[in-house]
Length: 171
Image (cartoon, rainbow, N blue to C red; front, side, top):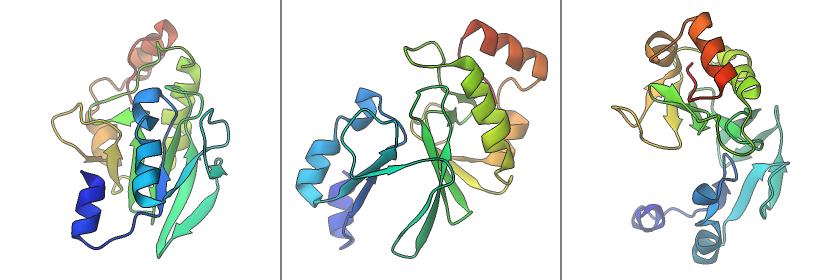
């Protein structure tokens, strides 16, 4: 659908940005590359083919768009977020509308998820629009400030308890 929409708008797809390497998130890479000639960007620890490997703090441009990479493991060991023009963040599966990614999957780590949410993403301003990798909430997007105030559990006690037992986490 995205490729067809890009063609309708007469846009070229040059890059595919992967937030992490779970199979269901990357299974369309090969087809998309064949259809568009695009190159793949992913974290340096990605276990799948990439044209450009990035890490925390890296910056790159696509046209006039500035993208900052944030390493946010926890849900997946190669999880990254893309902070675009200091206005929008694509959070992959680390943060959803109303909740956050699972930490009970192979390779996930509750302590790393805690660090990603409460240290790495905590510096993102409240007015930044947030787009998660899946639409599990009552909206397909949110803001960082809204999530800080309304994500379903947010007290330090609940956060630490949930992370320690490895269940779905909170922000």
